[in-house]
Amino acid sequence: MDTSERQIATVVAEGRQVLQKTPDVFRALLEGLGDEWTRAHEGPDTWSPFDVVGHLIDGELHDWLPRINTIVAGDPAATFEPFDRFRHLTANAGASLDELLDRFASLRRDNLAKLDALALGEDAMRLEARHPEFGPVTMEQLVATWVAHDLGHIAQTVRVMAKRYQAAVGPWRAYLPILDA
Image 1 (cartoon, helix red, strand yellow):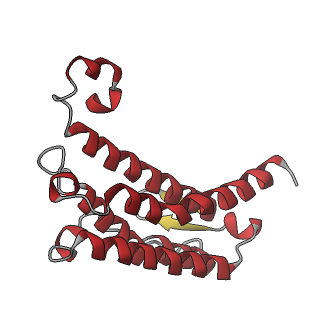
Image 2 (cartoon, one colour):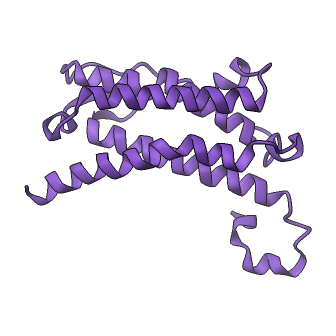
Image 3 (cartoon, helix red, strand yellow):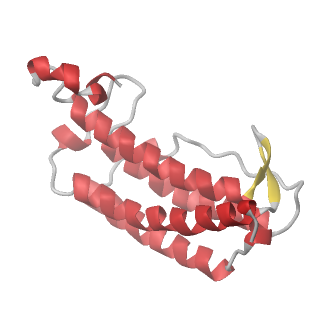
């Protein structure tokens, strides 16, 4: 196995570990907290932790697996459907955070089972389709993006929560760069 094949195998195997844990991370961070934590945001046109979980659900429904299936179909000229990054803001308006956490966990579990059933090998990881903005992308890039996307939203959620205490920490703010990120 050459270096690039090892890298591809690592992206999939290690990435899947993160994807599997993400719903539990959000549940551990948010379950049982009041709205002051879960509905807080960084200002106009920013997302609260509640919104982030809704966005992750929307990705499970309309982004990751549909795009993986487009690539698996084998037509490198096939173009992904554009993803509405804000659809979740109206779709989850009446839901509770507990409902969203449960739905996210269920959808992620189902999507990982579907991903496993595809048994994507190294050749599949090199298959391409077209992103409407970026042009040709590979399966490996899509899977790696799925993982980085999860981690980015975990960081976003923690940052939003930490900023609630931006003023309260007093002089320790100098040692807490998350408060100014």
